[in-house]
Length: 154
Image: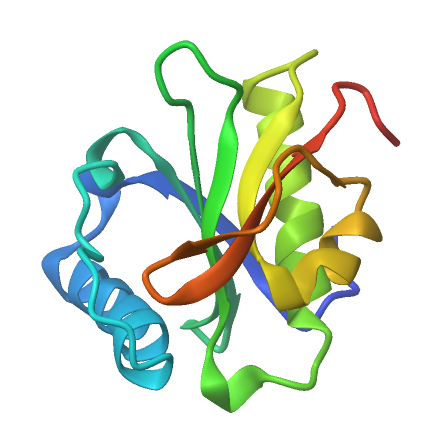
């Protein structure tokens, strides 16, 4: 079957990446979240080994990414959502989130999905069925809001 999307979807655990692939992925995350956002914080936070790493690939290059994991005693979470700078303006933010929701529903059926959104993206996440579950708070000098998408939301 031929995809109608300009990207392919790759979902795997950390141990399934080659050293070169892992280096490129972590470099992209640091470039976006630490360098571009001028935010010094622990990007390598210990959650990667247990997470699912979802990439949208264009010509073998990571164009968009999201990390999916389940904290203890909490709903599954989507985090570290990004679109690579060279691929912005192609609606890949929506695409990576749609794929992340689909993969969460597959791996964590019947469960709500949580995320911590940068506050300026609240409207975007609302358009995907997420609703606020907290007041705004500052994390790593960036305003955030916790949001959740109900189980089975279509």
